[in-house]
Image 1 (tube, rainbow, N blue to C red):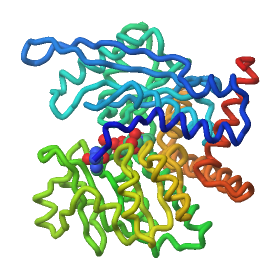
Image 2 (image 1 turned 120 degrees about the horizontal axis):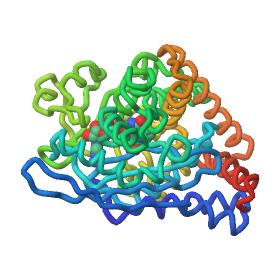
Image 3 (image 1 turned 180 degrees about the vertical axis):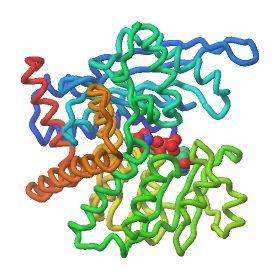
Image 4 (image 1 turned 180 degrees about the horizontal axis):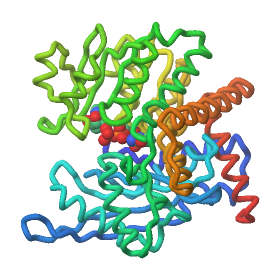
Length: 428
Ligand code: NAD
């Protein structure tokens, strides 16, 4: 279970501080980059289906926009906090910089649980969110996108509200839109595929044939499912996935030693990435406790659910067989666990590099919206592969040259790029 006392923003700042020290950044630059430039906190009143009014708390945080408009998703989550959104917005700044796209970092959220909300009520939250921040976001300033428990449908309600307020069509305001409505081919696959493009390169550097490897995955939502899909296409075998069980309010791991059947599991999974445990067990999947996914004798671990999952306790369960950890989720590893992974010499592909495929494809979506001309899926995925592969190799080369941990090398590249943009703008 997630540790509620864990503060992701403190973790993001500590990660930043350690690298700022290595880079000998001056005090002013550190002060600027360790906090968001701007943040908005607001109330969203929504008329519920039963006639009552409920007020939801919403956030938008713009960490840094020196390299271009802020960019980042909007999460709907019952445990959303301002500090979670701050941390995620900071990671977005590093993420856009590491893949070298001309965007900054932002993030948004609403404290709510879509499991318990009708479609009409969710639409009310989306439109209310936009009404509260329409003045402060836009295609040239801050571009939202889907994230945990939000989808293309949510984005379209938000776009519709934004365009109604602005009185013109502005598809570049938001990304992750459905196909045919300004969305890009490949966006659904992008984050999961991006993880596997970087994994493919990491294994190749380590001299390991991906087709001879096995993996265990935490999560079975958008990122996890498409990561499994491409990993299977490359010949790898996933033996375990895990997900949250809404009914029991806990998570379970589902294991099949000869490899999970992705199509079957998808067919018994709800839109929140929750697997029907009865049907899975009937089909021969072992139902194991929440943490079992991390205890598997595999080559690759892919945490692709939520933050703070590899912590001081769970890290002890990682088997010696594990050679690579691909952080599909944002912030899945605590600082304490990270020190253990570093010391064990496991090759880590840090979150803001591994899962940058989503924002890279969102950037492609904006480019296509601006041209009003849309690429075929193969073209999008080919461009995505190129971006992810070259970002991976830039980080791996620096890590090798300076004998740095992969996470530190990725931070060094990103922070230097953002600091340089701030300097050139005359901010520092
Ligand atoms: P999602 O909502 O589609 O899926 C989340 C999955 O995690 C679900 O299967 C859910 O059951 C599972 N889960 C939730 N709590 C869990 C727990 N305690 N234990 C085990 N499983 C649990 O979300 P997603 O879009 O796949 O995002 C997953 C992660 O990747 C998040 O950290 C998100 O911020 C990050 N991310 C997503 C994207 C994207 O494009 N979707 C991009 C970058 C980063």
